Structure formats: C-alpha cells, structure tokens
Amino acid sequence: MKNIIIIALLAVFFFLIGASIAAVVNMSEEGLKEQSLQTLQDSEGRDNHHAVGMNIIEEPVEGVRNDAESLETIIQSNEVTVINFFASWCDPCRRETPELNAFHESNQERPVGIVGINVDDRADNRDAFLEEFEVAYPVFEFADESGSIEEYNIHLMPTTFFVNSEGEIIRAYVGEVEQNLINNYINYVKEAS
Image (cartoon, rainbow, N blue to C red; front, side, top):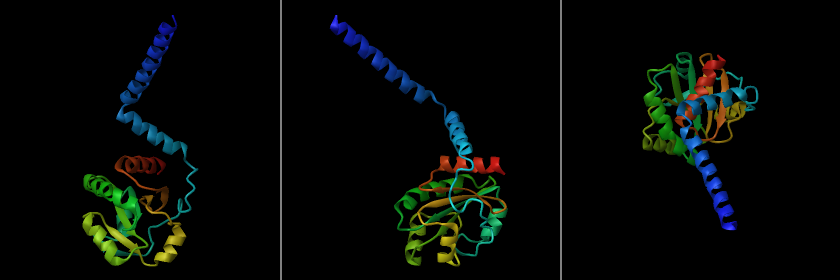
C-alpha cells in the first residue's frame, strides 16, 4: 500500500513538471515580445539612470569610423537611435558587438540607427577592436571625454541609450545588449514618443 502511494505521488510530481515544461515551451515568441514590452512599459518613470530626460543631440563628438554623417544628423534622421558606449577592454562589450553589427546590418531600411561611442580607451586598442569586429555602424568619441562621462554618468561599460529623433534620452540600459532587447527598447521609445 505504501509503495502504491509513493508511486502515485511520483506520477503526480512528474506530471506537474511535464505540464510546466510544456507551458513554457508553448509560450509563443510573440507572447514573449509582448511580455517584454509590457515590462518596459510598467517600469515607466522608474528608470533611474541620471541621463534619462537629457538631450544628447548637440554633444560635441569626433568621428572615428563610418562617420560620413554627424551624430546630430543620424539622430534627426531616425525615429530611434541606439547609442552604445563601449571600450575595447570591456568583455561584455566584446560579446555584444557582433549583435550590434547584426542589428545594424538587418535594420538599414528601418528608421532606426545605431551609433557607438568609444570611451576610456587608447586609440590603438580602440582601432584594433573596431577592425577585429569589422564594426559597420558609425563610431564616435566625445570631444571632452571626462566632462561628458560625468555629465551623462557613464561609468559602467557597456551602457546603451535609446534616443528619440529630437535627441532626448528616453531609456538607458547598463549591461550587455542583444537584438531582442534592443528591439523591445526601440518599441518602448516609439510608444513613448
């Protein structure tokens, strides 16, 4: 009798585990995107990065790579511009750069842009990094790096700003990004604008 109860309890336990796994597997990709966007919308007003609400459109920058257009022109010509702050010595920056390149390549027909701003780096290390990853999007550096880093509170690498067409920083993300996260934040900025 004791063995039958144990077997019955194990059967129920494994059934519940199987049902849970099936529920997770069946969650559609669209459902996950909606859930991510809803999470971003629910956190509105709680983004406590110092730079949110500031305007970056007229920040003096110097071109480093793929800089045929100015930062101001890039921002004004897109609904949303993703500005990624990186350094060659930053391991998460190294991991996310192929994602940023892929995002740039696959979104050239959309009104979104991506820009890199190199900070806290030596020019030779920066250039080697850009060559290694064959960075295809525009890359700049601040004209007054120490002043701009303090003004926008960019002390952790990588940091990514999501900027509307007027240059206002709508959201900021500290940490490594990937394409789905970028798209979710872009959708949030479009909804907020």
